[in-house]
Length: 261
Ligand SMILES: Nc1nc(=O)c2c([nH]1)NC[C@@H]1CN(c3ccc(C(=O)N[C@@H](CCC(=O)O)C(=O)O)cc3)C=[N+]21
Image (cartoon, rainbow, N blue to C red; front, top):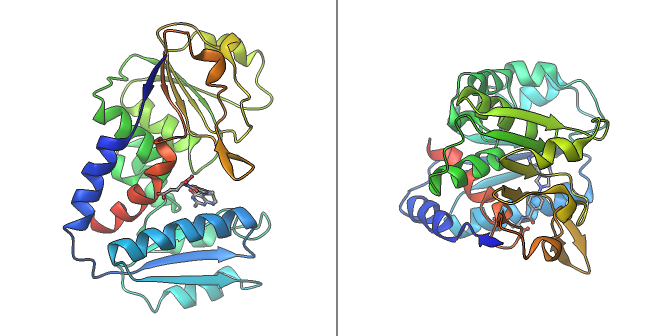
């Protein structure tokens, strides 16, 4: 197993961000935030402080979409926003997706999602963009490659699939109902996982020559555990990007990077 890391990409992005004079704010928007959302918020806030970015941590409770739009109308169009998911309890957010016209840092709006179909990398949500930036950074050509993505959300899997398809990769999204996922995973060239199920995939799922990107995060005794059981694949001839120095360590960077696009 060849262990990959995002250190040099991370340095490249930090250098670009540190040289920048941030004049616009980031709005962190949450609604009845879960523990996971609050944790992610802390991680983003820490990054904003490091880089001298002003942020507003706005927590909604029972507000309607109209009321939220009213609140947002007081900000500058160049201010960035992220709607932290899950935002409330599975409610309709279509008006917000249609009407918010601030800088969309995590690809929430219909406009951003549409741009992804056209192959616009900058429109990708932060985590999906971190994956693409990593593959671009190591000069991995995904044209014609068979890619399997274990994640079917609007924040990672679906936009990533559409983007890679626009660059002529052949992409399959698998979900918990997929018939014989092992067969799909074993026969792909690139496997990207973000299911958040600790060490779910072991060596039986893989074959030599594959690139495995583990975006999954579970917590055990305060440690982050990925979806892939890396010990089990340690003597296989695969390339592996795990959670240590992996995608997780650059997602807040790609998120704030959206402010300077
Ligand atoms: N619109 C939206 N986009 C998201 O990307 C999103 C979301 N909503 N809702 C909540 C989940 C949860 N999530 C985390 C990502 C990283 C860490 C994390 O801790 N990352 C690094 C630190 C990263 C850094 O320091 O840059 C670490 O693992 O040490 C935690 C949680 C994102 N989410």
